[in-house]
Length: 107
Ligand SMILES: [Zn+2]
Image 1: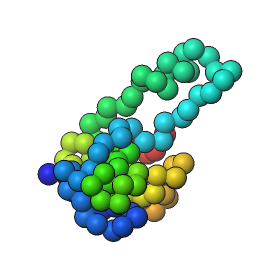
Image 2: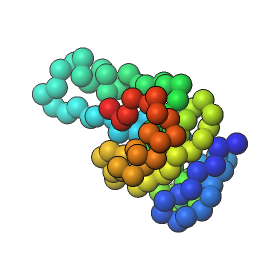
Image 3: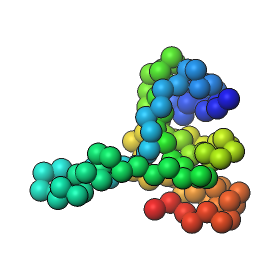
Image 4: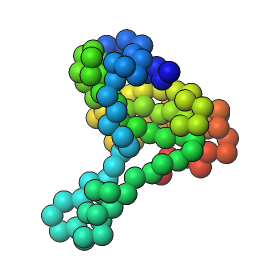
């Protein structure tokens, strides 16, 4: 079972308390963008076997959105951080690189 620590209230929440928000750090395209960019934003998602950054909501707790880095293959959770972050925190990226030297890094 997946367990994530909510970065706001500190609760170790299992997945029955959480609602998935899918991929984190999507680049949004607004007016003036090309149809291909908008289509990519709407439909193209990464589905890696390994390190992945995701959005989650503590639906049956504080109700806030947060982001999590985890391994989709092993379910190992590397960390969680506030949803307002535009990129993963540097200390979290360093922690992931220590555990997964083959990881190509956050793009
Ligand atoms: Zn919470």
